[in-house]
Length: 603
Image (cartoon, rainbow, N blue to C red; front, side):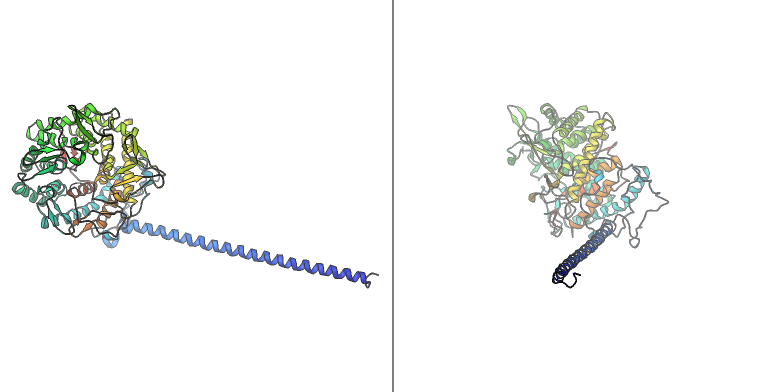
């Protein structure tokens, strides 16, 4: 009855209008929802594509890394180059999983390996070694595998030495140094044939006997100290006197002993000081000696405590005990004035007729290092009978652990800091890396046995420190270490601008050698091989090997300078690292001086 009434029509129009608005709003809402869902789907699709892309990039990076390890690092051979992709399974059965499994063993390096193809592999690898642990069981089978691989690498180190010696012989034979870019010959060490004499035992140990005997002939016919003026007592003792004595020890040729006695008697005049400590400089013609003005005429710790191995050997060989007594006198004094913590400042001086320390700078690096080294090595040289040298060593190492041993932030790398005026200086010289070898030697010759708590502490520190030294190489763009690093609170350490250079130093590969020989762990050969490849790529030049101004600039041309210790130490330790057949026995028969010249220990 209400359908046709005006009121019902009005109501119907209002309801229709309301319905239409509701419908429109619903459509709009549905449209917005649909758009939102579309956007969500698009976003999810985009995220999926990005994730897939990242996965591909990661896989590509992994494959590239593996390729670098295989091709550039040459951790396994290539059939086309005379190697093999896998080790012979019958000859070398696989290790079982777990602690017995060593994951880094690879096939021998081919003789035609191209070092220019090598790219440094970067830092922060092998982290399981960071804290000085022994993560893998060292079996005889693993040692045999490592030895086979090492022999293939030894071949390349020998070739490197041949490259240098061919050019030294042609352009600088008998001179102190060969400049590896200009091929100039210089006699900046007084004209004593320093590179030749420093390299004699390297030639012998590498089997380069023809070259060794040619060097002997030059020593016999031309080496003379009659016109040599002022020289460094320290450097001449460790390089030249040590080189002659080692050549004599290896070859038993009397020419070397005769020349060594002549040089030793001249250097010995540096001991004519009021307190019996050797002066830093001595004139080989006149015998006059003095300390260095640049160091306020003070005695330097490393220089007074780094001639005893040489003079004790010379005393035995010649029968002149004065060489041993006067050189050991420095340790008589050091024993008396050594602080309770065993850590000795770098400078000493006379005061009222007594020797006192002249500063409060403590360091196992420059100006201090080798006096600590000779404490443990005199103990070894004397057949482990002279207890006072061992006691001095242990006292110093206890102090080092208590006051100088540090952990970096954030990764906890182990390092030995300096101390100045009682405050820790968070830096570490490349030179300090010798301590990896010295600590290991001390642990394995500990009178309480290598399994004693002290020996195990020292060995663990040796391993952890050597890992840090390896990182000093691995983290740079060339894979080569700077002169020193400064430890910070951000990324463990950085390279200060004034420390970015590398002068072909040996201390890290020295530590690799000691730890490999004493523990048998092949990892030190892996790290040494990386270092050698970087030296081959970035330091090798036409006539030898040059120093680097900046280890983080792989495009920089090397310097025209090659120290004699590159042949005497760096090349020797690298060769011996890869030489399982060497006559050298650092645990039972030989002791190295600080220039890597081996002498037989006293019976």
